[in-house]
Length: 192
Image (cartoon, rainbow, N blue to C red; front, side, top):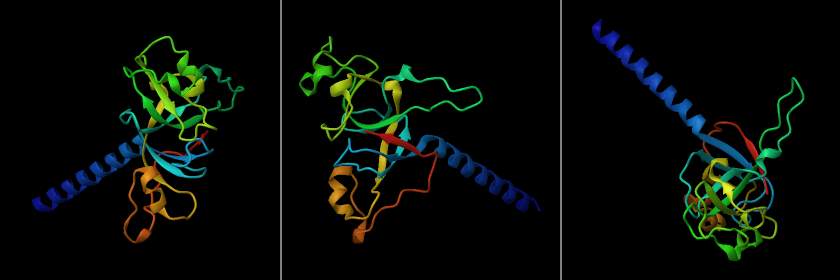
């Protein structure tokens, strides 16, 4: 009888621990659908990326960040939900303490300081012809970053091996696509 009670209690603890881990995972991961051409050839319109909230911000990492200007949100009419933030997907080019890459664009060339300021980031799209990024907008606040892209999935078919270099993920054996884990968090759309 005591063994049965002990086994039941341990089983209940295991289920509770797994449930808590699943809830924590859902809060830390967000599935985002890419909209626009600013990150081509790495990501295309309709691709999905899995974003880890609060991941490390380092040069070369791809992040999802709130679009500037942040103060331009209009209040919602009474009784209706307000407009949410608009999200962008960009690559980190410089972090606080790095030299300002002035040659990249007019907004950075006009920066008064020589180093990226604390709390600032230089973010760039991979397709400079269409990207609204630090070349035109200057520094992005680091606290506007939703998270770091940890995985991607191409929207259409196609050969995943052709994107292995661009996304940093190698394709699985036999040329099949690696699926994303089941949807976690909520979907967000990002624009160029």
